[in-house]
Length: 195
Image (cartoon, rainbow, N blue to C red; front, side, top):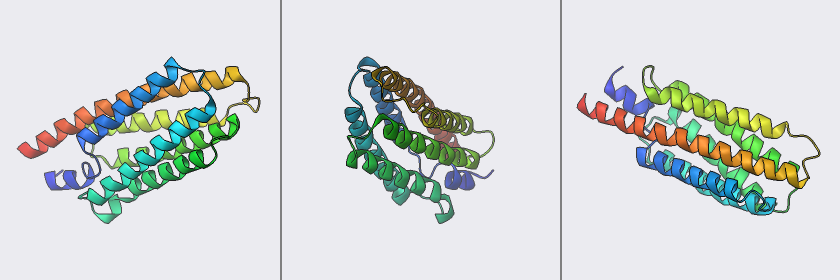
């Protein structure tokens, strides 16, 4: 594949530094959730809301700054808008029940996962970032499905604490995958510069 084609398809909406910072931010969120699992769901929902809105705005900014053709921008645009809508829903209804929290988070993770999967398949074959993006997508969809499948009795404190810890673990795994992707992306950009 020609370097120009790779740059247009693979690199446009991803800066290695922004991906690295996203990964670090998600890991910090995961550590906080695991360290204090007994915090109320309202705090979690507000924290998620702020994170999702900021992350969504960052995605929209990347699309605006991207060098990709219009047909390649739909994934990042959709990710950005889904995150903003999910974040605003979490901020508008901070007193939501545990079930509503799980549904909002589950839908967001599933949509993010499917869109990341589409982005992963757009990455040219042979580039390590392709598999990291696909792994990220599979973990996100799986976790989203798990959250949606939670039992109706999810109002108990034990279940809420367990969900918080699981979200923390998921966040750390996703953050590590994003950090690895940032290093692979940086290497691939350097290889393109040499080509």
